[in-house]
Amino acid sequence: MKSLTNKRIILAVSGSIAAYKAPDIVRRLQDLGAEVRVILTTGGAKFITELSLQATSKNKVHDNLWDSDAELSMGHIELAKWADIILIAPASANTISNLAAGKACNLLTSVTLASDCSILVAPAMNQQMYSSSALQDNLALLKGRGFIIIEPESGDQACGDVGLGRLPEPMKIAQTVSELFTSTELTGKKVLITLGATIEAIDPVRYISNHSSGKMGMALVDACLDYGAEVTAIHGNITTQLNDRCNNISATSASQMHQSVMENINEQDVFIACAAVSDYSAKQIQNEKIKKDESSLTIELIPNKDILSDVCKLNNKPITIGFAAETRDFIINAKKKINKKGCDAIILNDVSKPGLGFKSDDNEVVFLTHNNEIKITKSSKQKIGRKIVKIICERLL
Image 1 (cartoon, rainbow, N blue to C red):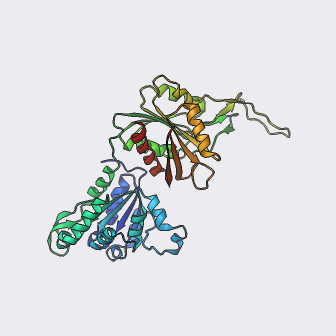
Image 2: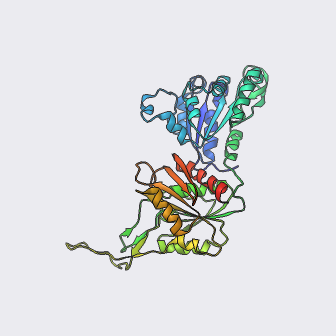
Image 3: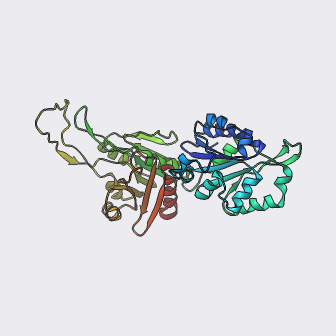
């Protein structure tokens, strides 16, 4: 079974007796590493309590489209952007009908309409309801729109009937979700990614660095792994958890990162330079802590080796993608960087915007090649990472 580490999943629970399985579905998704938030419909609340879902998910349960506190920040839109997957389990006949009609009559349907992620629907109802032509027509309509239907199982039902309509067991549902994150587009490919911030020592106590957390780089690592690549991650200072499915190499300074990249670049198919590497380092690192006095302090800085440029100069260079964190003249500066470095693409992000870029869980970027600009609108870094890797697969490989 595939990992769901760092994946964000909304479990939407609608009005079916099978709602009693919802806490177990939450647990099975969590066992695979996912963070789960729950939407509970009015009908679903007749069969399962908000408290039980809150206790298992360890998150607030969302049940009201008109929640004044949540809607101050457009809560249903934020939920839609947050999710990597929306899983509707159980999905009642009424919920399926509303989805097919494109309604926004409650929080579940509103979030679904506002989302661009994969949506799974697990019908659970009386066998006669499930086999009805109206229900089957609605399911066919949803399939045509790209919804993924988790087929129900056959067996004894709460009403005493026997037939199709039973919700599959939670473990099977979790497995179905996990398989969605598996792709073969990078199978057999090797990808080297740098991430995090480098640290340049001044003395034994102080150093020069930046605000990079490594979250964007780790999102790219996760996405490449999901797409089937063999990944090497060379990381500086990070505040995010490493993925143990790849080859992780620590490199504190820009010099160490340059050395590690050059030692591992051979036979790589793709190189993504996501790390925020210091442009300069101290010419002389003091052996003792510099003591404060009343006079001014001058530290002479020298330029560090340019990792991206040096990779681009290799005779058999891989596809190379750099990052440009800018605060002004965004497109102009990013295009200059493509030409100056000689790379295949630059991913531009405006780090002057609050809530985006450094340290944030969200980002907004522009994927720039010599001939194209592809804007990826604000979303979680995990989603941005998957979209970037998809573009690399479609446009550069």
